[in-house]
Image (cartoon, rainbow, N blue to C red; front, side, top):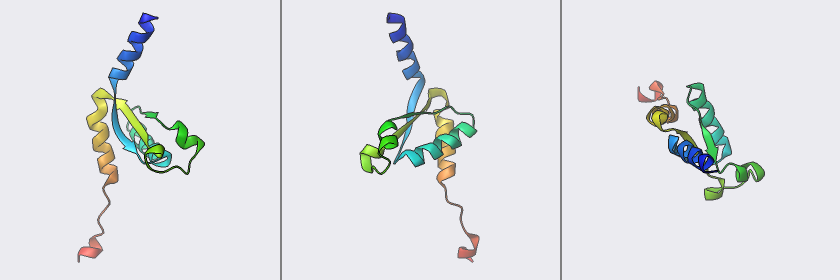
Length: 92
């Protein structure tokens, strides 16, 4: 039993919360982007959003957890995905 608790503690220390999505669709999108880059993702608090998809606010929030040693890379990937492409025609 002690070994199981130690293993769970080590597993939770190996992952860190990266971001909180505003809902399950956003969390699934971010998870897909990160996993396509080879970064494993665990979702937390997604159960309520699955049962009641119309939830909003804190109830709908889903946390994305990634390996601690890949957190910086994961954040950079998500920031790159959030940047809107500029339309050069608007600036001319």
